[in-house]
Length: 218
Ligand SMILES: Cc1cc2c(cc1C)N(C[C@H](O)[C@H](O)[C@H](O)COP(=O)(O)O)c1[nH]c(=O)[nH]c(=O)c1N2
Image (cartoon, rainbow, N blue to C red; front, side, top):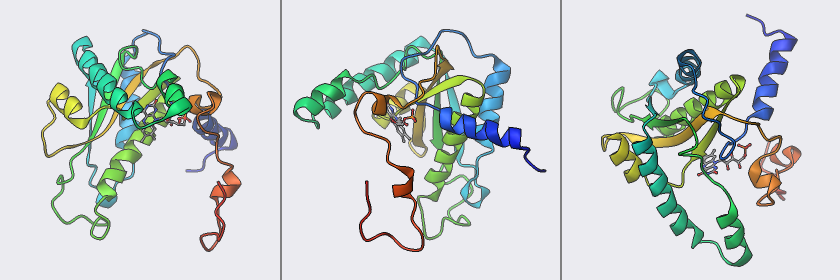
């Protein structure tokens, strides 16, 4: 199957216009067929040894969202102590989640023992199963963008809060808590760039040939 130039352009458009969404969610419900397509795309991610270690927990209840939001507030307060001076003020002014505004939460997990202890491709790099679950997150994020649905990743919550709220067993790793919903708009630049937290690194400084450069520019 060949991808036509128009289809290729749509893929790049999706990649470059994907954003982490934290504030622009609307309450419009996501139709079941749209959610199914997004989750099916996530489920078709590559995975080490084809172990497909992920599960997706769709969270709709206001009670669960409230608990996770409280977990965010606690972790955020702790995190802000790690920044100093003006940087701390800047950190505290950022909106870094849309847990209660988003109509859906999706928790992505990883079952590291799903297909037994020896996994093709994981034998010398044990973290490959976790990376596979992250590939599922990226598929989900891009498929959502193609459906004009926004996604925001919230990692400023301790795992135990998400685990207790969603009844996730101890042997299952928590990879991501995602806020998902239709949005008023997708920003053209990342919020952290637009608000002066960090600039986008020049792509040409990230791409090297043959060896690690002597002087690796930012
Ligand atoms: C693993 C991981 C974890 C997080 C994120 C991303 C990833 C990949 N990001 C989103 C992140 O800030 C964002 O992707 C970058 O700022 C780039 O912006 P765009 O995604 O291009 O809009 C994120 N954003 C946020 O507001 N709160 C968070 O807790 C996190 N956590």
